[in-house]
Length: 262
Length: 262
Image (tube, rainbow over all chains, first blue to last red; front, side, top):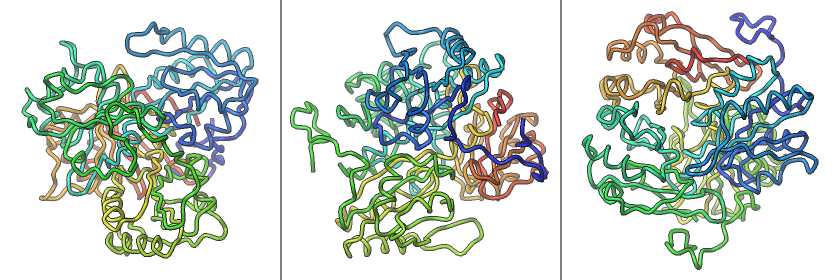
């Protein structure tokens, strides 16, 4: 290991370029961004162009996959609401097996690997197996999707704080304290929001958030099929705001500040 | 305008490529990412390589500025803790003036323009002036900086929600409800955290967050001078965690799950 954590920094090793060529047997966890290929980072594009295997999830677009080396094997190992999915342990085992076989592996996830992407579990598995890896952050969809609709998720006049949460935590086991959430935050961004939007909206209404609070839903942001819709919280709570996966939802007064630019 | 908001989508205009060449008189609000030039998006790199003016803030690294066309004028219009700064209205006026002069303008901000970047104010000014613009999201530092340290800001075992906030709201006018924040959010990410870290930590302690809660500080993430430090909340509250700007701070048990990889 280098001296990354040293306090004095005197003998700090030069930082590796994030886009230096992968070694054989190395894995890169790469955030693919929201969808459009031109929202890949330069590092992501370089690593994709010179790898042997791409292990990707369902949220990675065809345009992004086309950036991979023509010689690379593309392996789908994803999860998506309602579809058959690959167990997390199987995905990690696959990456470890590929790396041990000397492959240069890109693990490609929609958005950023460390924002509701299970990247933490994967790096723990890789580290435990002694596999060399690096992490390439991506443009997270919770920021990019609102931006495509002209919504700035923070605004000096509205909020000094911002919450990201998943749309999955709506059952009895939910770890979300809805009342505290509503008290704490003027702006909420929901990932994976399509399936449970009405349930989330009802929790927020029950926790005291106003019926008139604006709700924006951005489907397939940055892709040709992108679609924007907007309603108020009560409409969403009543199940009258139609959304389909993958959708990012923004709730709060920043929606009213929207400046449509496309 | 195209039919971006239409429900049926039948006559939806093709989405513009985000990286299509800028027109003369057009402005692009571009997120520069956390610092390393290879964390620019492809769209950002393309627009920088073919523009006339770059209006940038203090958080944009030299490496990123070197990606601009050699013919482009580089104009500093930034704010940074403690330094003389350019008024927001002056920055917007400058961009409008440049665009009206037919320049292809890239407005370049560290991280993402819409996450504590005042991008919302700038697009309102541009729209009000009738200037054509587009928004290119960037990799936000609140995700990238922890990733460089091996910290996934979400982890299935720790949190289903995540709060971003600025380190600026610690005075009597603060809009932060610290008690609700602590109840609602197991993980907090602070932007612009250096100056007021001890004050924020004291607010969190007073609101009930445990003294032993781990705190990670990542300075100058992805740049050669990057530095990682870690302490507990009580140490930070007592002013014994030295940090300097620009620093991203992560507070919560995801810090304990860190897998150092560099």
